Image (cartoon, rainbow, N blue to C red; front, side, top):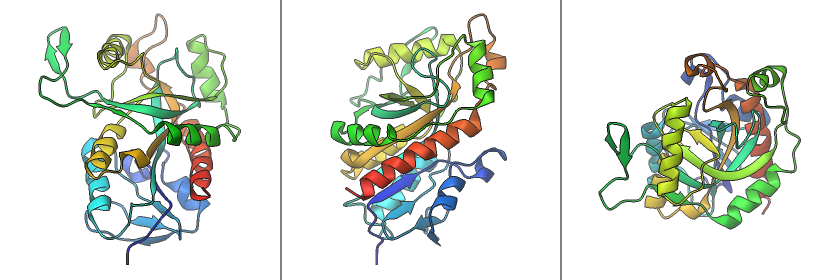
Length: 276
């Protein structure tokens, strides 16, 4: 018999997946009394209560797409009445959000498919668009739930912000997310990302991460895209500070704060959706 959850939570990585750093999975296992089931095609166990399924996707697009397709095509979980919720960390442009801020995605863009021409690029010439607009009502419900919680801050995040001349505290916002297998950092490449967004008719982006594009395309294939929401907390800036070196600033991470606020906001979203 299939599980019939109200919400499926999709963190990317357990501790073993991320070179010993903090885990996006562990806080959920601590917060709920999950049972676990091994499912063919999943790299991690499927964790579940009566109305929540926790399905770690793995890092990057191929593991994520495989996980989503396994769930949608298999008989272990019925997704017909479930909302799928990505909860995890992300990078962000300093102009858009600060470390520890939470963003609910209203659109997903895949950075990877494009045609590079030395210092220029074009959108793909094949008849496919790599932009997914997410359901606005679901986005607004998720953002409203996320705004009900108090976000944490940290000394490490404040120290990193100081290098950027940034004295903001974490807040909740809404904006596009960029999914990419490439972990990029620096002013030159993020300028290209902004150009790609403009080519798709978007005025910039809020977050950048490695799983959302794969999640969106897999859910779309199964007619489930309107049941998807992405909640990300900013663990790092996507470029160097003014006068800085991207080789140095790529390691300026408020990793623990990002995971903490992602899960804090994510739990509020999950609880709001399961009670709807």
